Image 1 (cartoon, helix red, strand yellow):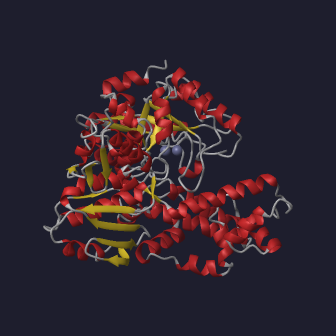
Image 2 (tube, rainbow, N blue to C red):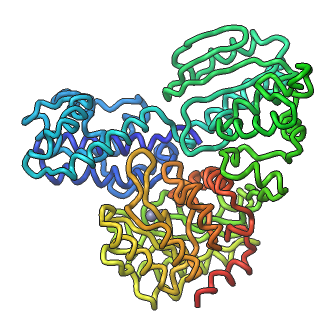
Image 3 (cartoon, protein in one colour):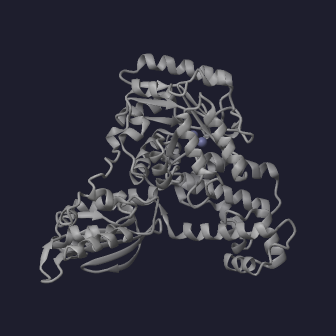
Length: 576
Ligand SMILES: [Zn+2]
Ligand SMILES: [Zn+2]
């Protein structure tokens, strides 16, 4: 997976719509841009592929004009219309729109009434309580805007795992091909697979590091070289990510890897254990604290073994009880990629996906899966090509036909049924009962108050035909916070009703997150890791979902899409 171009594009179209709103332009034009922004947001990673295959016009909401703009952006990296449009409004005012809580009307108001034309001025105006007295604003608006500013600042400093991990893997792969490279690995929060990371740290051992450094700083991904030296080089990539390569001594590699992988809290606790044993651990190795004599440091496993601990997988190293569990020999057997047997939340051309059911099935077979479920959107999601009852029946027939042709592979029928604002489902029980997999999700009314939105989800879980709740908290990392829901209650009802919760593997969602995953597991709730792919390429994001599951201490038995088809079908009937 490369850069998330479609998200970039989605954001540009969103910005265009917002600027047009500030300028009071034609509402139909504005609506068209908003619509395509939404569609692109749900179409992960592959808009370039679609373009190459000449399929831009098949994307819902993409007419000739917008297709041209997408093409321009993909081929030149820029959109002239957007650049010109931006010049018609003060830059700082447009920047205000990057704050989740500030819409075009608010931005216009802030600019005209308070002369707020950048984020610093906005923050100041909020703190001086100048905003609550503006027309249509109140004290709550001030709190919301302040929270929006924080979200914005965090987003500026952190990068999605979905962006950083493939980049780090590419760099490590390139450098490991050099014969000068002995050992190499990336460390830090990236190795712990946190959902967002600050920068990339790569450690390497070599007798002749000059060649490695030369290759590193001249990689095509590099935009700017910050430092180039024999033991450490730093660059900024074209995605603005800071990457360091550090040369360490072979006898220190394991200790350095352990040290730089962190987390800080985990390492502090480990060092305390070492002190009790008369040892000292640092990035150079493990030493006898009295004599200063080196005991070990070459291999990371050794650092743990010397403390009589089994190897602790990096994803667990957060000081959330993993050291205690290791001491009791009770570390979880974390879920691994080969254990996944299928993907249960996929979209096709029938709604807003890019590929056919057959193409999705073929891609899944290539990945070694035994089954998939097709879960296109339901009727009320008109902008996403939601299926009517009749279309759904047609789709079921097509899937039945396709299954006759496929060897050792099964396509399950399904739907991503919309949980409407009042908590009712978009289809009757009668229709839902005909499907193998029913995934239910919220796609509107995100801002409802906690009680209402919690009730909506609970009501859906109480329906015996609903198997899975998709993207349960609705967050988009850095852009939209989770719904104000009562997660404790939701997990309890999931346990009581046997409803499965999704780990949506889309890099911007990763929803549920690691902490909620573990909470769910401890209450006996099972989960499903699903890509929500809107294209064949989207199936590749499974890795990020697995990363979250591992950080949430999940094992094979906690994840229903590790089951064989027979057992899965049985499990899905458990609610009846
Ligand atoms: Zn959805
Ligand atoms: Zn979906």
